[in-house]
Image (cartoon, rainbow, N blue to C red; front, side):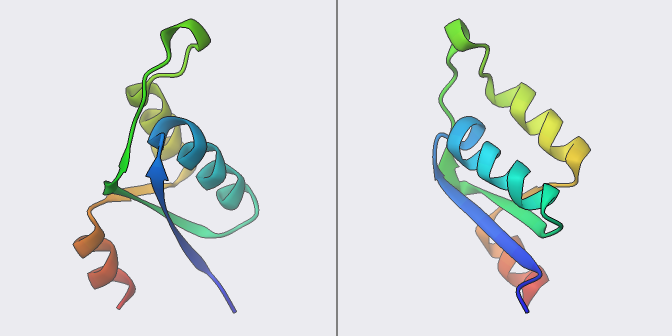
Length: 74
């Protein structure tokens, strides 16, 4: 019965992003709690916070604060 997943943690644009992307591809509604995650830009690998967020938003990942996620999911 799980329909929505909230992702948070270290490396918002790497670990969190790739987990969120895989969850979206599997059909889940996905939220990334921005105030419970920290990004790490890695220029040598082409991993940037702004690029990951832009791609995530195009995929339907919702970026919000923990309080907003809690209020929306009730």
